[in-house]
Length: 337
Image 1 (tube, rainbow, N blue to C red):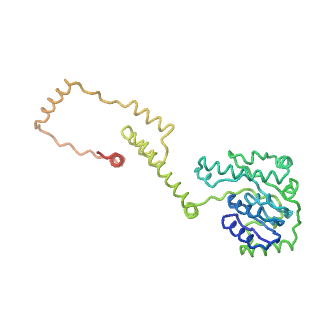
Image 2 (cartoon, helix red, strand yellow):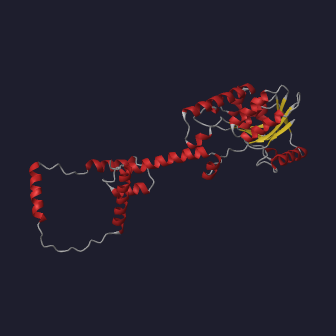
Image 3 (cartoon, rainbow, N blue to C red):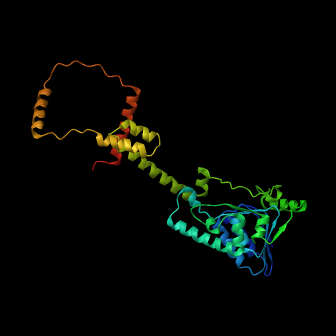
């Protein structure tokens, strides 16, 4: 049986792959042809588990690139061939939560387990000293969680380190065969079929970021978690500024509307202003009696002259409106019992 993987590796890819293997006849040999940028390392494990259950020979042909998760597939076949212009990229597995800053200890442990298996398979497949000499990169550095290094190999280098056993020269007939195979699998030639490049230099790494809509559709739980964290962070930021509303309402308004965090110089200035703000001392009992007497005297009607209304500037009106919003928010957050 011959199976082609001319796409990224996902749970769908793995499911289809395993289904195809389950349809194999007893004693039937397997040939897998790949041209993939990689994908989900966890999806690869299902494919590998099913591959290892086969007792018949397993052959792999790299028609284009074998990168990332697709690279590690090479470690689980009996024989691997590639074209003279095929390219390879290896790096450690990466958890999707890393991009969103959502990694917890349990996620790092899961990732370490996955990368531990990948490293073991890679070291069993290749000549490690020769690999490190040719690439200039240590295996331990590839699997370091503090970084993510892309190591690129040409077909020639892949054979030198023992990743592939045979290199085939690209010909017009081979090109036609690959085009037909790609069209049969996807209706078009996959983004970049390395076999068609005149320059065999491996492709540079590119990072494709999901839009918010794509993240919401493809990973709704992650989107909800990230959104809620953002809401909490914004609430904390606003409340931090509002603690200084009695000290400098103008600076507080500018800080909140400027979407800046209360730290560094801004925090230092407001803290200093709060510390140096003069507060009236508690009056003595004698002063309280005197004030009461003066209050009674002041309560007597006296001739008054109506003063002209003070004309407020637009800035004063805006500050007063903002202050009213602050007080309303405080009242909502701390209702009277």
